[in-house]
Length: 112
Image (cartoon, rainbow, N blue to C red):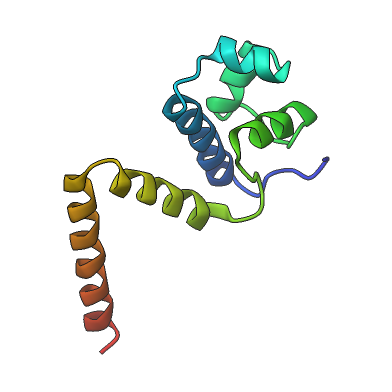
């Protein structure tokens, strides 16, 4: 619990993920406060990246939101966001498939 986050980037990613999860669930800060017992002002600070350590309250919010503050890193959050985007509409699924195909082709070309 006393380990400091490795970088501001790590903090920013976690903060953005927490905010995105709350909004995608359609929950307000007041609602999350009632469900977790964590003050809404502190939740807002977490979502703004105003923290350096994984405090007990930050861990409570991460658990409630289904976010692992250490485990999977950027790939988890990016993949999770990409999947939600792709599954949000047939058009977005098509765009996601085209993007993946493009990136795969680009990767093959740059490895030659």
